[in-house]
Length: 183
Image 1 (tube, rainbow, N blue to C red):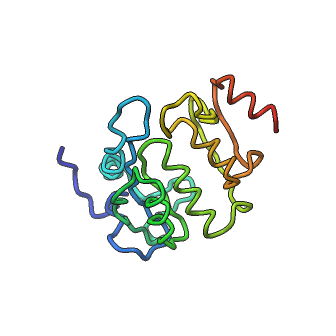
Image 2 (tube, rainbow, N blue to C red):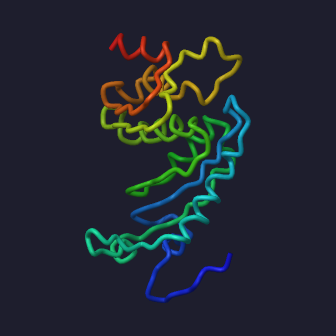
């Protein structure tokens, strides 16, 4: 699809420059191998970048063009997003004021929170998640680590206090309800 070019209308996809210095940064973390259900979530970072070309940087409510106020950079993609320890180390290398991870499956949240905790300490982390369920299962029934208990891992590893997590859902599993009830 060829998009119309208007020099007076900055496309959000063009706002992000290559490099590492910027107020606002995006980083692709296309993890997908931990998902129980086979999927193509590794394609999400490139799909989001493509979608950004259809949006403006102009924020009408504030009569503000974000591109005039914030330097934005695209940090590329994590090379091995499914290797959690490597992913945590790679994410930890960036020092941008605001870093948005473009996933991937839910497991990238654990990597992102772990990297952030290394920098600022877990007590300063608050987490907002919107999901069909909150991945607080214990994983005992799973044959391998999966994207289905990343939230529990964050809490058990003391990367986030459960009370600092805002959970929005329509469907809790029994094991998730037990963990919440114990707090």
